[in-house]
Length: 86
Image (cartoon, rainbow, N blue to C red; front, side, top):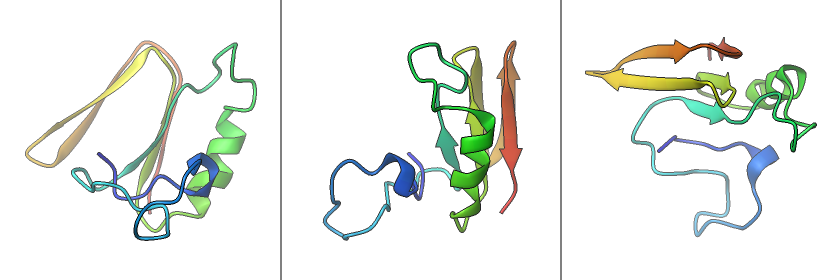
């Protein structure tokens, strides 16, 4: 759904040869922040990841969702999240 996934999440090479994705929304997502099974998914790692993107991004945990209506993003959360403007 995002325009870019960032090198952090690339596990295969897209036909374009980069980290581009569908681009349905104009921001990228770093999922599963602070998940017990993913100790490397921290806000600090998300910040480093977001610094390498040309677009806005969100880091969200499993208690957070993003809604997009007419281009407006709303964060729905009872957990941990952070917005990284472009």
